[in-house]
Length: 402
Image (tube, rainbow, N blue to C red; front, top):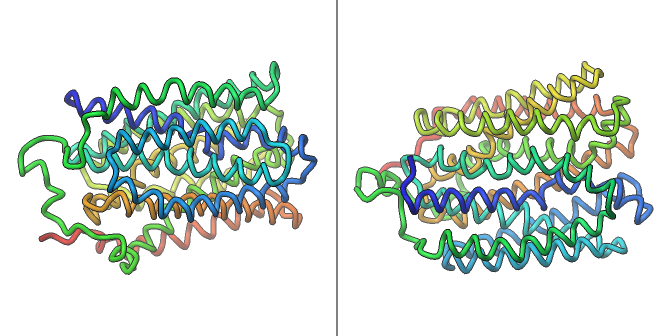
């Protein structure tokens, strides 16, 4: 399916999305209780710091992320790796609220932001006719991490201090990633594309939008409203998983175990969505992305049995699998790939901002006395409104041909 350079780009994307997990909410949320206990802070305080640090990282990402259009990908990746390793080291030394803010900012910026941005932009730019399959395979790295790491971290937290875990991660990152990155993308150039013929380079036949043009397009905001539902709702769920456990009277390991359902269904959906996107286009699949997420809201509202946790996270996993691929391929289809780095920097920043919004909103509502069911109702209303808006413009998402 993929030739030599194509395979290297895929493996590069896989590795970078896997290691982006250290800055993702599902992973950081595993240390929520340990950090709150160490610093003696509440859910709301943690959420406010998490949200504000994430918000700052999204702002910085808009400027730094666009540099991927100007710098050789091998060098750009090396800078990102150094930052990720340094960020993990800082996280292992959290000792105050100020250090917590700095550590979360660095992890959200380097991990969730720059690592995933580097992976998806590289894949989206290089691939044309197989972009859907390529992105779904690349995002399998994050899905693998979501399957492996929660249970592994829960175990490691029983045998060592949480700070040690982060120190080990920092060492692994700085030893392994530079070598892997150099071997995989050292020969990748800006003009490198999948295939050789003009027929395969179909992206050249549509208008190549600059970022300033994109932000003036009303379609961008409606698509974004749908794209951002998954980040803010899932982040709230992951960061406050301990609150959900307490509210539902589930055992301490229920959600960690349920991540397996989340990961398995996310992976299955990744591969299926990649095939569907290459056959039907992202624009036609997009309308279905948040339907499983909406169903998960109803599960958390109406069911309390621990088994429902597997269904709840499984449905989120389906939407996550769709969102991971659609979040990159949709923009490339509509706006072209010439300026995809700067466009993806903006959309990734908005995604990071959405996670900050979700964390802050969940934390505020929890401190105000809202139940998890009431929070789910708020989430459901947002999903329904964004879905209706997308349905109304679904026929207007075609790229402009030249």
